[in-house]
Amino acid sequence: MLHVIAPAILFTLLVSGGVGVALALPRAGRMPQVVGAATAGLAGGLLILAMSIRAGADAPNVYFYIFSAIALGAALRVITHDRPVYAALYFVLTVIATSGLFLILSAEFMAFAMIIVYAGAILITYLFVIMLATQAPEEEDVEVLADYDTTAREPIAATVAGFLLLSVLTVMILHGTAGLQKPQPVNPDALLADMPRKVESTLRNHGMLDTGDQIAIDETTGKPKIDGVKGEIVIAMESGLTATLSRSEWPSDLRVKNVEGLGFDLLRNHPGTIEIAGVILLMAMLGAVVLSRKQVEMDEDAKAAQSRLLSERRLSDSASAAIGRGPGGGE
Amino acid sequence: MNDLLLASTLGSTSFPNFVPTLAQSGFPVPMSEITLAHYLVVSAIMFTLGLIGFLTRRNLIVMFLCTELMFQASGIALIAFGRFHLEYTGQTFVIFVLTVAAAEAAMALALVVLLFRRKESLDAEAWKDMQG
Image 1 (tube, rainbow over the protein chains, first blue to last red):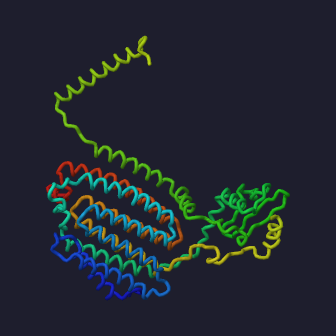
Image 2 (cartoon, rainbow over the protein chains, first blue to last red):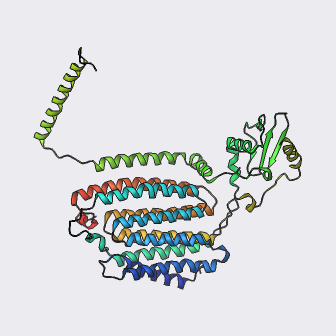
Image 3 (cartoon, rainbow over the protein chains, first blue to last red):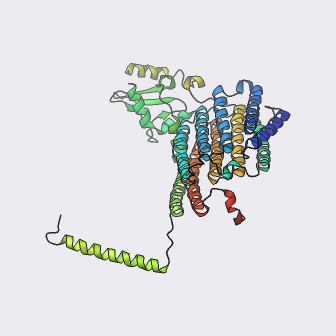
């Protein structure tokens, strides 16, 4: 059935993981939380290790195991810790470990964007709101925790639902990925044809273009003769000769970097989506301002008094401005 | 310098379609589908943890933290698929997921502050009478 892991092992581990998570959820100290967390962690770890045993040479490298262990362990602590501030801090740990996974997947830009945007901005907002929306503790009972933080709502039903979903997901993933074709190796340097300035400056920095030389222009298309796929750059020299630089002579840093490829994909293939994302962010900003504004309750008399006060102030302002403009009142 | 270029002009006829090996060029090597399955399983576990947290926790702020956990899990899956197919679209989508997450956090936290002002409590059960 499944080529990576036997179904019996998979479902045993999923059930024990579910029992562990259900035990680890906060239940007012009545349940052995540590035992539950250890069970869940052990089951998750064994699940991934059992997959790797059959994977053989295709198993991911050791950093994958380190980062996913940190990410999943911290995620478990996010949902089981009974103090919201600690849960938010464990979520930061999850974000950092996830960025590590992104780095292994050679998505460097997203890894750092994740740390900057999530850990740096969103989580700080969360921490601010946690501090804002918490009652100040009394003098004598500093350590008191809110009742709604220490007891979970329907832990068993939720865990059963969650782990049913997880078992369906894992079976589908293991079945579905088995039928996937490995893609052909793609040459990311094909994009270099669209970056003539980068190519030119890199070549100049390496002394491969003299001052009078430049990259040859194709007369029919008007584009520079850079072929990233074949690995050829045609150079028009000052003397009128042309020369072809083949891939083996290119400087080693002449290649499309992750940020450049991502930028090209973002702006060339999804320009409309960026506009929509901008509109979403603008609406979110306006919505947050409108929602969190404090509404001042006033009855009719108070409104009348307020408007009278405002008009009086405006009158006195204009009067003082007129005096200020008069002779001798200037500054 | 020009001599080198001339030599390469002459030499280029001998290997017109020079294709370097993958290791030489530093290109991303295609990832095997079993490696992809590892990442997807990690992503599925993280998504499930977020889901369980959202269902069980009663603190409004922690509930929204759990949705962020689910966003993270979807990000892992997207980037793993993008790496498998050697495309940038997966990473581009994570940027949009990040945008939606930021917008959601701003709105949700404003709502949480509003709800806290009404009932002086972060308990989701306090709003049980809305029958939602």
